[in-house]
Image (cartoon, rainbow, N blue to C red; front, side, top):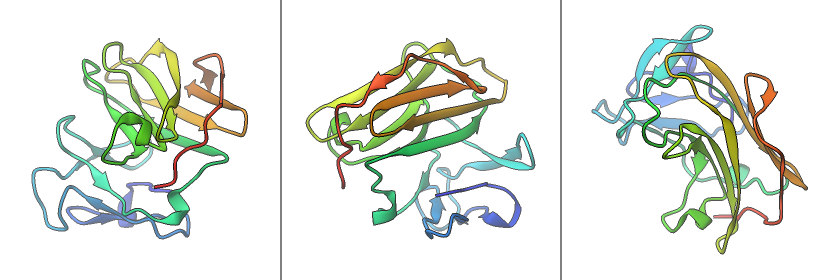
Length: 173
C-alpha cells in the first residue's frame, strides 16, 4: 500500500486512500465515524501528515492477499515522535496471537526508542534492532526492509543496523 495522508487522499474522520492501486484503504480510528481513536491532521514534512496520540489512535486496513508479503518488503515512513518512552508502532500486519504471529512489524523498541523490525512465522521471529536513538520533535525518514536473505534498517538514509540473516518466512494470515 501507499498512503500519503495528504489532501484528498485522506478524508479526516473517515478513510485514507491507498494510491498504490491495491485498494488497501484504511479506516481512521476504530469506526467510520469520528471518535477519540482518530489521528488528527498536522503539518508534515511535505504537506499534511497525521498525528497519533501514542495511546489509541490508529489506522486499520482490512486484511487482503496483497498484504501477505513473504519474499521481499520495504516499509518507509516519515516519523516525528514527541515521546519515545514506550514503543511506537509505525506499521505492522498483526494477528491476535503472540508477536511471532506478526508477519511484519516496524516500530520503536520499548525501552530505548531505537527502531525495531520483526518478521514472524507463527513459531519464531527474525528481529533487527537499530542503533540510533530516534530524536524527538525531529522528522526522520525511516526504512525497514527484507529480501530473500536479510533484514535491514535505515534512518535518514544511513544503515542503522548490521543486516540480520532472514531465516524465517513471514506467516500468511
